[in-house]
Amino acid sequence: MQTLFAQQDIDFTVRYNNTNSRYEVYANPNFTQNNFTWGPSQISVLVPASFPDQALLITSHAGGSWGDNSIVFAPSSSPSFDFHGIQTGGQLTNLVANQEKLVFSFISPSGSCVAGLRLFINGSDPNSSQAGMAGGDFSNSIDNGSLTDVYNANYDNGGSTCLPLSTDNPLQLAELNIVAYPNPVVNELTISGLTTANNSIQIYAYNGKLLKTFDTNEVEIKIAFSGYADGVYFVKIQNADNRFTIKKIIKQP
Image (cartoon, rainbow, N blue to C red):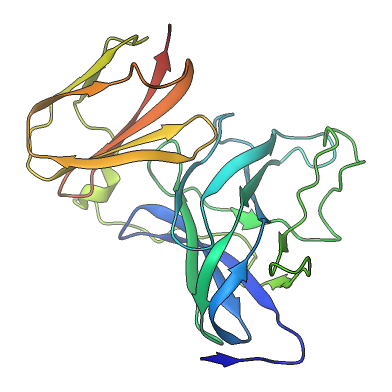
């Protein structure tokens, strides 16, 4: 089924989901099309410069495998923000007119909400030639598989807000008493201190791309790291109460 308009347009927004403790980026098309050819694309996120200088941990939901592949921290032309170009090679995607589609999500390094995140504004935010941008082009673009850009605009883009949580809400307890060792790791990483059932483990590359996810009911697990290239990784451990911690892991030869 497809409902085509004279001009195919897709709008985007970002907002914080308190229930899942994550930021979510949504696409909102003006057309309906099954198997829309979502081609190579970029949606750029601006985060407050107070964020740690590292890639965002991206989870892909639609439009292909997204990764934080282009980053500039606090450029002199816009020192209040870090620029993150989230890119995908694309994938066939079902779209429904005027219905939001979650395309990717990410978490803050602290595990809690930080207000003020927004999407890059084409034609307004610094371009590749401006001071401190290092030649990086952070313009939003969505290829429709025919080299036509169907990105239109952002909506509700005044900066993400954080709803207050009650003091006994487990989502505020971002840090768990969990140990990951040895770090640096060569062959095998041990994670201990998993005291509840239904723990979710996610391994991210340095660019924020999700590499592996699995669940465990064990209080201690061992993860083979010998197959990973040398470099920096992030391991997110989340329990059944939605409390989680993020460990920065160094992989060595």
